[in-house]
Image (cartoon, rainbow, N blue to C red; front, side, top):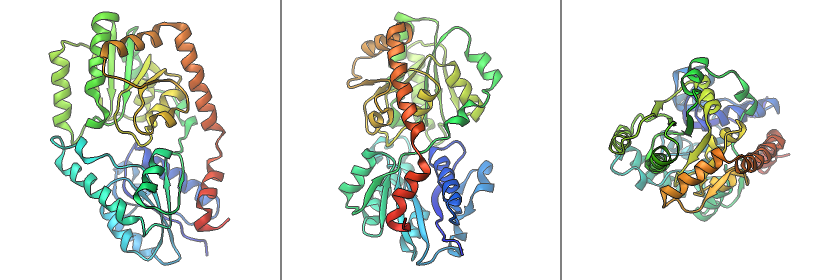
Length: 358
Protein backbone atom coordinates (compact mmCIF):
# COMPACT_ATOMS: atom_id res chain seq x y z
CA UNK A 1 0.00 0.00 0.00
CA UNK A 2 1.33 3.42 -0.96
CA UNK A 3 2.06 5.79 1.90
CA UNK A 4 -0.44 8.62 2.34
CA UNK A 5 0.83 12.21 2.26
CA UNK A 6 -2.31 14.32 1.74
CA UNK A 7 -2.42 18.11 1.69
CA UNK A 8 -4.90 20.24 3.57
CA UNK A 9 -5.85 23.84 2.66
CA UNK A 10 -8.34 26.41 3.83
CA UNK A 11 -9.12 27.18 0.18
CA UNK A 12 -8.13 26.01 -3.28
CA UNK A 13 -8.67 29.12 -5.39
CA UNK A 14 -8.26 29.79 -9.09
CA UNK A 15 -5.01 31.61 -9.86
CA UNK A 16 -3.88 31.54 -6.23
CA UNK A 17 -0.20 30.95 -5.45
CA UNK A 18 -0.85 28.64 -2.49
CA UNK A 19 -3.23 26.46 -4.49
CA UNK A 20 -0.82 26.31 -7.41
CA UNK A 21 1.99 25.28 -5.09
CA UNK A 22 -0.17 22.54 -3.56
CA UNK A 23 -0.79 21.16 -7.04
CA UNK A 24 2.95 21.18 -7.83
CA UNK A 25 3.74 19.45 -4.53
CA UNK A 26 1.08 16.86 -5.29
CA UNK A 27 2.62 16.22 -8.71
CA UNK A 28 6.07 15.63 -7.21
CA UNK A 29 4.75 13.46 -4.36
CA UNK A 30 2.80 11.24 -6.73
CA UNK A 31 5.83 10.96 -9.02
CA UNK A 32 7.81 9.79 -5.97
CA UNK A 33 5.23 7.05 -5.29
CA UNK A 34 3.09 8.64 -2.55
CA UNK A 35 -0.69 8.73 -2.37
CA UNK A 36 -1.42 12.46 -2.19
CA UNK A 37 -4.88 14.00 -2.47
CA UNK A 38 -5.72 17.65 -1.77
CA UNK A 39 -8.51 18.47 0.71
CA UNK A 40 -9.87 22.01 1.03
CA UNK A 41 -12.52 23.78 3.04
CA UNK A 42 -13.45 26.05 0.11
CA UNK A 43 -12.87 25.14 -3.55
CA UNK A 44 -13.28 27.44 -6.56
CA UNK A 45 -15.67 25.88 -9.13
CA UNK A 46 -12.88 25.81 -11.72
CA UNK A 47 -10.74 23.76 -9.32
CA UNK A 48 -13.46 21.38 -8.12
CA UNK A 49 -12.02 18.40 -10.01
CA UNK A 50 -8.62 18.89 -8.33
CA UNK A 51 -9.62 18.70 -4.66
CA UNK A 52 -11.76 16.72 -2.28
CA UNK A 53 -14.08 18.34 0.29
CA UNK A 54 -12.78 18.78 3.81
CA UNK A 55 -15.25 16.35 5.38
CA UNK A 56 -13.73 13.46 3.40
CA UNK A 57 -10.38 13.88 5.12
CA UNK A 58 -11.44 11.39 7.80
CA UNK A 59 -11.11 8.66 5.16
CA UNK A 60 -7.31 9.10 5.01
CA UNK A 61 -6.62 10.34 8.54
CA UNK A 62 -4.57 7.98 10.72
CA UNK A 63 -1.48 7.95 12.97
CA UNK A 64 0.56 6.78 9.95
CA UNK A 65 -0.66 9.57 7.66
CA UNK A 66 1.71 12.51 7.16
CA UNK A 67 -0.42 15.61 6.51
CA UNK A 68 1.00 18.69 4.77
CA UNK A 69 -1.11 21.55 6.13
CA UNK A 70 -0.85 24.88 4.31
CA UNK A 71 -1.04 27.38 7.15
CA UNK A 72 -2.21 30.78 5.94
CA UNK A 73 -5.21 31.90 8.02
CA UNK A 74 -7.49 30.75 10.81
CA UNK A 75 -9.78 28.06 9.40
CA UNK A 76 -11.90 24.99 10.09
CA UNK A 77 -9.23 22.98 8.26
CA UNK A 78 -6.68 24.04 10.87
CA UNK A 79 -8.94 23.21 13.78
CA UNK A 80 -9.69 19.79 12.30
CA UNK A 81 -6.06 18.75 11.72
CA UNK A 82 -5.03 20.07 15.11
CA UNK A 83 -7.15 17.37 16.76
CA UNK A 84 -6.49 14.62 14.18
CA UNK A 85 -4.08 11.73 14.94
CA UNK A 86 -1.93 12.43 11.85
CA UNK A 87 1.72 13.38 11.86
CA UNK A 88 1.81 17.04 10.91
CA UNK A 89 3.98 19.11 8.58
CA UNK A 90 2.97 22.78 8.55
CA UNK A 91 3.76 24.81 5.43
CA UNK A 92 3.59 28.45 6.48
CA UNK A 93 2.67 31.12 3.93
CA UNK A 94 2.50 33.95 6.47
CA UNK A 95 -0.53 35.58 8.03
CA UNK A 96 -0.95 39.30 7.40
CA UNK A 97 -1.19 41.19 10.72
CA UNK A 98 -4.83 41.95 11.52
CA UNK A 99 -4.26 45.69 11.95
CA UNK A 100 -3.92 46.12 8.18
CA UNK A 101 -7.56 45.10 7.75
CA UNK A 102 -9.19 46.96 10.63
CA UNK A 103 -11.78 49.40 9.30
CA UNK A 104 -11.94 47.62 5.95
CA UNK A 105 -12.77 43.95 6.61
CA UNK A 106 -13.43 43.19 10.30
CA UNK A 107 -14.18 39.52 9.62
CA UNK A 108 -10.87 38.93 7.85
CA UNK A 109 -9.09 40.90 10.56
CA UNK A 110 -10.57 38.46 13.06
CA UNK A 111 -9.49 35.45 11.00
CA UNK A 112 -5.94 36.81 10.82
CA UNK A 113 -5.90 37.52 14.55
CA UNK A 114 -7.08 34.02 15.40
CA UNK A 115 -4.78 32.56 12.75
CA UNK A 116 -1.76 34.05 14.48
CA UNK A 117 -2.99 32.66 17.80
CA UNK A 118 -3.37 29.24 16.15
CA UNK A 119 0.18 29.57 14.81
CA UNK A 120 1.43 29.59 18.42
CA UNK A 121 -0.84 26.70 19.38
CA UNK A 122 0.38 24.56 16.46
CA UNK A 123 4.07 24.79 17.47
CA UNK A 124 4.09 21.77 19.83
CA UNK A 125 1.69 19.88 17.53
CA UNK A 126 3.89 20.26 14.43
CA UNK A 127 6.64 17.75 13.67
CA UNK A 128 8.19 19.85 10.89
CA UNK A 129 7.47 23.46 9.87
CA UNK A 130 8.37 24.81 6.43
CA UNK A 131 8.28 28.50 5.55
CA UNK A 132 8.19 29.52 1.89
CA UNK A 133 10.81 32.19 2.67
CA UNK A 134 13.52 32.72 5.25
CA UNK A 135 11.38 35.62 6.51
CA UNK A 136 8.59 33.13 7.26
CA UNK A 137 10.96 30.52 8.66
CA UNK A 138 12.36 33.02 11.18
CA UNK A 139 8.82 33.83 12.27
CA UNK A 140 8.15 30.13 12.83
CA UNK A 141 11.33 29.81 14.87
CA UNK A 142 10.46 32.86 16.95
CA UNK A 143 6.98 31.39 17.57
CA UNK A 144 8.46 28.22 19.08
CA UNK A 145 8.57 25.68 16.25
CA UNK A 146 11.40 23.24 16.97
CA UNK A 147 12.29 21.96 13.49
CA UNK A 148 12.06 24.46 10.62
CA UNK A 149 13.33 24.85 7.07
CA UNK A 150 12.64 26.86 3.91
CA UNK A 151 10.60 25.41 1.03
CA UNK A 152 10.30 28.16 -1.60
CA UNK A 153 7.09 28.49 -3.57
CA UNK A 154 7.45 26.60 -6.82
CA UNK A 155 6.13 28.12 -10.03
CA UNK A 156 5.53 26.65 -13.46
CA UNK A 157 7.62 29.30 -15.22
CA UNK A 158 7.20 27.61 -18.59
CA UNK A 159 3.44 27.96 -18.25
CA UNK A 160 3.80 31.70 -18.67
CA UNK A 161 4.90 31.11 -22.27
CA UNK A 162 1.33 30.30 -23.26
CA UNK A 163 -0.31 32.85 -25.54
CA UNK A 164 -1.66 36.04 -23.93
CA UNK A 165 -5.14 37.32 -24.65
CA UNK A 166 -5.07 39.11 -28.01
CA UNK A 167 -7.93 41.42 -27.02
CA UNK A 168 -6.29 42.51 -23.75
CA UNK A 169 -2.96 42.98 -25.52
CA UNK A 170 -4.61 45.27 -28.09
CA UNK A 171 -6.24 47.27 -25.29
CA UNK A 172 -3.04 47.98 -23.36
CA UNK A 173 -0.20 47.72 -25.89
CA UNK A 174 -1.00 51.10 -27.48
CA UNK A 175 2.11 53.23 -26.98
CA UNK A 176 1.36 54.36 -23.45
CA UNK A 177 3.84 53.61 -20.69
CA UNK A 178 2.17 50.94 -18.58
CA UNK A 179 3.00 50.71 -14.87
CA UNK A 180 1.69 47.43 -13.45
CA UNK A 181 0.81 45.99 -10.08
CA UNK A 182 -0.57 42.45 -9.67
CA UNK A 183 -2.06 41.25 -6.41
CA UNK A 184 -5.19 41.43 -4.29
CA UNK A 185 -6.54 44.93 -3.76
CA UNK A 186 -6.05 44.88 0.00
CA UNK A 187 -4.63 47.43 2.44
CA UNK A 188 -1.22 45.86 3.18
CA UNK A 189 -0.38 46.23 -0.54
CA UNK A 190 -0.48 50.02 -0.04
CA UNK A 191 -1.91 50.75 -3.46
CA UNK A 192 -2.55 54.31 -2.31
CA UNK A 193 1.24 54.76 -2.36
CA UNK A 194 1.42 53.34 -5.89
CA UNK A 195 -1.28 55.81 -6.99
CA UNK A 196 0.63 58.74 -5.43
CA UNK A 197 3.77 57.79 -7.35
CA UNK A 198 1.79 57.37 -10.56
CA UNK A 199 0.18 60.79 -10.06
CA UNK A 200 3.62 62.43 -10.08
CA UNK A 201 4.77 60.31 -13.02
CA UNK A 202 1.71 61.06 -15.16
CA UNK A 203 1.45 64.74 -14.27
CA UNK A 204 5.10 65.79 -14.51
CA UNK A 205 7.00 63.10 -16.44
CA UNK A 206 4.92 61.03 -18.88
CA UNK A 207 1.34 62.16 -19.58
CA UNK A 208 0.83 59.21 -21.96
CA UNK A 209 0.92 56.63 -19.20
CA UNK A 210 -1.40 54.09 -17.64
CA UNK A 211 -1.60 52.39 -14.24
CA UNK A 212 -2.83 48.79 -14.29
CA UNK A 213 -4.00 47.45 -10.93
CA UNK A 214 -4.69 43.77 -11.57
CA UNK A 215 -6.30 41.77 -8.81
CA UNK A 216 -9.38 40.74 -6.87
CA UNK A 217 -11.03 43.35 -4.63
CA UNK A 218 -14.00 41.27 -3.45
CA UNK A 219 -14.47 41.73 0.28
CA UNK A 220 -12.47 44.95 0.20
CA UNK A 221 -14.98 47.15 -1.59
CA UNK A 222 -14.46 49.86 1.02
CA UNK A 223 -10.72 49.98 0.37
CA UNK A 224 -11.24 49.81 -3.40
CA UNK A 225 -13.74 52.68 -3.20
CA UNK A 226 -11.23 54.77 -1.25
CA UNK A 227 -8.59 54.15 -3.93
CA UNK A 228 -10.99 55.20 -6.69
CA UNK A 229 -11.83 58.36 -4.74
CA UNK A 230 -8.10 59.06 -4.49
CA UNK A 231 -7.72 58.66 -8.26
CA UNK A 232 -10.60 61.09 -8.84
CA UNK A 233 -9.30 63.62 -6.31
CA UNK A 234 -5.87 63.60 -7.96
CA UNK A 235 -7.43 64.12 -11.39
CA UNK A 236 -5.76 61.05 -12.86
CA UNK A 237 -6.77 59.29 -16.06
CA UNK A 238 -6.00 55.83 -17.39
CA UNK A 239 -5.98 54.14 -13.97
CA UNK A 240 -7.45 50.70 -14.62
CA UNK A 241 -8.82 48.42 -11.89
CA UNK A 242 -9.18 45.13 -13.74
CA UNK A 243 -10.51 42.96 -10.92
CA UNK A 244 -9.72 39.25 -11.07
CA UNK A 245 -8.59 38.22 -14.56
CA UNK A 246 -8.17 34.95 -16.41
CA UNK A 247 -4.68 33.59 -16.94
CA UNK A 248 -4.43 34.69 -20.58
CA UNK A 249 -5.46 38.24 -19.62
CA UNK A 250 -2.85 38.26 -16.86
CA UNK A 251 -0.18 37.21 -19.36
CA UNK A 252 -1.28 40.07 -21.61
CA UNK A 253 -0.94 42.56 -18.74
CA UNK A 254 2.62 41.42 -18.07
CA UNK A 255 3.44 41.45 -21.79
CA UNK A 256 2.18 45.05 -22.08
CA UNK A 257 3.91 46.36 -18.94
CA UNK A 258 6.88 48.73 -18.97
CA UNK A 259 7.49 48.40 -15.22
CA UNK A 260 6.18 46.49 -12.21
CA UNK A 261 5.81 48.68 -9.11
CA UNK A 262 5.28 47.10 -5.68
CA UNK A 263 5.11 49.28 -2.55
CA UNK A 264 3.54 46.64 -0.28
CA UNK A 265 4.39 46.76 3.42
CA UNK A 266 3.87 43.09 4.29
CA UNK A 267 4.78 40.13 2.09
CA UNK A 268 5.65 36.57 3.03
CA UNK A 269 6.87 35.86 -0.52
CA UNK A 270 5.07 37.85 -3.31
CA UNK A 271 4.76 35.59 -6.35
CA UNK A 272 3.98 38.42 -8.85
CA UNK A 273 7.56 39.68 -8.43
CA UNK A 274 8.85 36.38 -9.82
CA UNK A 275 6.22 36.46 -12.57
CA UNK A 276 7.31 39.97 -13.60
CA UNK A 277 10.99 39.00 -13.68
CA UNK A 278 10.15 35.91 -15.70
CA UNK A 279 8.39 38.12 -18.27
CA UNK A 280 11.35 40.50 -18.44
CA UNK A 281 9.38 43.37 -16.87
CA UNK A 282 11.65 45.70 -14.83
CA UNK A 283 10.76 45.61 -11.14
CA UNK A 284 10.87 48.41 -8.56
CA UNK A 285 9.82 47.19 -5.10
CA UNK A 286 9.80 48.38 -1.51
CA UNK A 287 12.02 46.21 0.69
CA UNK A 288 9.32 44.91 3.05
CA UNK A 289 9.09 41.43 4.55
CA UNK A 290 10.35 38.70 2.22
CA UNK A 291 10.57 40.91 -0.89
CA UNK A 292 14.39 41.22 -0.93
CA UNK A 293 14.90 37.45 -0.81
CA UNK A 294 12.14 36.82 -3.35
CA UNK A 295 13.93 39.12 -5.81
CA UNK A 296 17.27 37.35 -5.18
CA UNK A 297 19.25 40.49 -6.06
CA UNK A 298 17.10 41.26 -9.09
CA UNK A 299 15.33 44.51 -9.88
CA UNK A 300 15.54 47.74 -7.89
CA UNK A 301 14.88 47.72 -4.14
CA UNK A 302 13.51 50.80 -2.40
CA UNK A 303 14.55 51.34 1.21
CA UNK A 304 12.50 54.55 1.51
CA UNK A 305 9.21 55.27 -0.27
CA UNK A 306 8.23 58.38 1.69
CA UNK A 307 8.85 60.77 -1.24
CA UNK A 308 6.59 59.92 -4.21
CA UNK A 309 8.40 62.39 -6.46
CA UNK A 310 11.73 60.59 -5.94
CA UNK A 311 10.14 57.20 -6.58
CA UNK A 312 8.50 58.57 -9.75
CA UNK A 313 11.89 59.81 -10.99
CA UNK A 314 13.36 56.37 -10.31
CA UNK A 315 10.49 54.75 -12.20
CA UNK A 316 11.17 57.03 -15.15
CA UNK A 317 14.87 56.21 -15.05
CA UNK A 318 14.21 52.46 -15.09
CA UNK A 319 11.71 52.81 -17.97
CA UNK A 320 13.53 55.39 -20.11
CA UNK A 321 17.27 55.03 -19.45
CA UNK A 322 18.51 52.10 -21.54
CA UNK A 323 21.59 51.53 -19.35
CA UNK A 324 19.61 51.52 -16.08
CA UNK A 325 16.93 49.31 -17.58
CA UNK A 326 19.48 46.89 -19.01
CA UNK A 327 21.33 46.57 -15.70
CA UNK A 328 18.10 45.86 -13.83
CA UNK A 329 16.93 43.29 -16.37
CA UNK A 330 20.30 41.54 -16.21
CA UNK A 331 19.99 41.14 -12.42
CA UNK A 332 16.47 39.79 -12.86
CA UNK A 333 17.58 37.31 -15.52
CA UNK A 334 20.19 35.94 -13.09
CA UNK A 335 17.51 35.59 -10.40
CA UNK A 336 15.21 33.68 -12.76
CA UNK A 337 18.11 31.46 -13.84
CA UNK A 338 18.69 30.55 -10.17
CA UNK A 339 15.02 29.66 -9.75
CA UNK A 340 15.00 27.55 -12.91
CA UNK A 341 18.13 25.72 -11.76
CA UNK A 342 16.38 24.55 -8.58
CA UNK A 343 15.33 20.90 -8.62
CA UNK A 344 12.13 21.36 -6.66
CA UNK A 345 11.34 17.66 -6.52
CA UNK A 346 14.72 16.88 -4.94
CA UNK A 347 14.40 19.86 -2.60
CA UNK A 348 10.92 18.74 -1.51
CA UNK A 349 12.15 15.21 -0.77
CA UNK A 350 15.12 16.62 1.16
CA UNK A 351 12.91 18.88 3.25
CA UNK A 352 10.42 16.10 4.03
CA UNK A 353 13.09 13.47 4.75
CA UNK A 354 13.03 14.06 8.55
CA UNK A 355 9.38 12.94 8.50
CA UNK A 356 9.08 10.63 5.49
CA UNK A 357 12.56 9.17 5.56
CA UNK A 358 15.09 9.22 2.70
